[in-house]
Length: 497
Image (cartoon, rainbow, N blue to C red; front, side, top):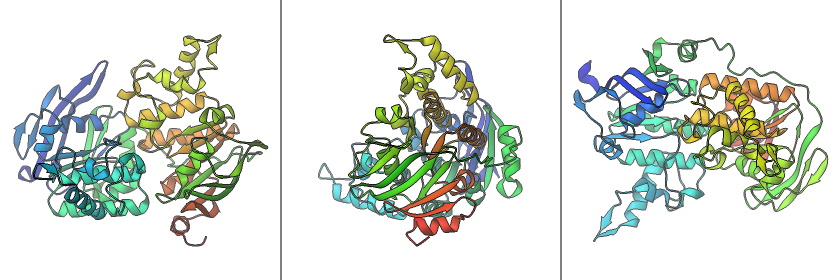
């Protein structure tokens, strides 16, 4: 069997100040397989892959590539060895085009000049192979998160990597895009490419995986053939406890109307959107990429100017022109892209949590550090944020723990109308259950939640009502009790409800 191994990692150890990230972890990868790497946030998955990609150096252990021991010096060396990685946190240059990002540092040239025509044509073919039809000359900053994710995948594929690491590649993709990605993965497998696949979406693992390795707290727990293990067994290996219900929804009594949107329109993105949101309710917003879900959230929160329509908050007409005004009215907005919009990465956990509420912790212009510490410490404990302490910079937290910090920020602000755009993106199954329980606590206390999600089981499992958007319009409304995945998908594709 060793002759069929593309990669072996033996007794890998990595420590950071005060933290053992990996404790003598073993992992191997066969040629032409999809090997799932599973574990809670902070389990060590990304650290192990960063060692393989050359971003980190291991403290001890050895790595064998095609049965030959190697020392991976840096990311460029890793690429030269045929290892490509798609990080959960996107690694693109916003002011360059999609094509320029795909071929950055490897641009095709003619007569000493970059051959832009050939570069754009090559990028177009790569993106078309992933089911994308947007212009590769578009700037990355103008693309949605899902489109940016596809650019990352196209970039890795263009390197002709023989080992491809995919860290949460579907976290921002729709069901249709996921199917297209899986079709591409199967083609890569048939070409002998070996894929390490990290995902918290348990259903995906059984559809695309061949084997699965579970890490917990930096330790290897076990490796199994996917066909020989069950979902409850994997969850138990990950969290070392039973999770009895994936979506522990507790229906809260519906209170008064706290938000009414009527005829809201903005450019070509939104057309005459109308709905109401009530105390104690989770209103789910579903739809495909480009349907206008995030644009709706941004308009309500005052990030984007609306052209027509009205917004009423607790019975009073409001013209929301800035996020600060929205926050003062009781809104909180957990954005889709936590890295660039939800966090100040160089700041500490405490500073990020307390940032929107700094006025509440200030007296005569002086911030009370003790009050901030008390408030932030409560969220660190309640949300089980894995950090060395409140002073740790959020840039050093795992993606899932960064998401918990963003959530804490808005809970700390005491907002009672919360907009959650992809609230569990990149969150492991155990942390998801904790966030769902927290949502139950919030709605029981009368908080109203507008939840945008690409995860249909999540929409169905946690919503009280569901709105489905298509091309900037609401194309259907369902009670969660009556809705099915098929009905939602039909509406999302533009068919009548």
